[in-house]
Length: 142
Image (cartoon, rainbow, N blue to C red):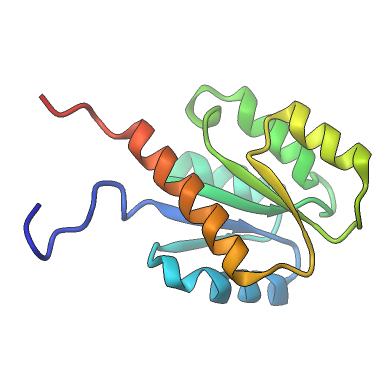
């Protein structure tokens, strides 16, 4: 790879989904060291539209949102062929709710983290998920 070339898929964005702007800002700031573009959505509906329009490597999404919550959005994402394999990391402020964790697992969440988030742990999770997804979706080189 040439010295100034980007690794394949590096341009694929991270999608951050939360209905609170301050949480989106905090997530974006925490994930800056990854160097990937960041997209924001303030609702499940907006997240669904975004992943169908933009190249996304991973989603970090709050569970508790009005209208379509994070679990419902995850369910919709995994029903669509084009987003079925998109890794979704859920974030919740609900302390140790086993029902939410079990449902997240059943719906295919890539993981679930409890608030307050450790920024470095978040970066580790998101970098791994995004890199794996990017590699899995990269076209085969002859």
